[in-house]
Image (cartoon, rainbow, N blue to C red; front, side):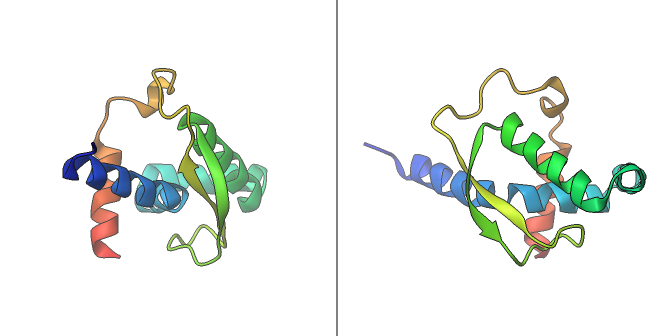
Length: 116
């Protein structure tokens, strides 16, 4: 039987995963260095091209499945984005090293959610 804590965890993970793309783009626009790199990448391609690549990277890094489209993102860098859910495979040890360890992303996402 699932405990209350486990139910909370599963619910929170499902809700967060639906908006993970939006949260990553909010993180990018609030980080001066990342935002500068985003703009530079967009000059070599397009913002749509950059957004598409980053969205795919999120899906692959966290083994997510697509479940729909969000047409009203909070990030100013997006016009719409694909919502996700955790796949049966889930997050595993093969997550890229760049996504492991540093909890500053999680802290900034939490802060961003509190302000919204």
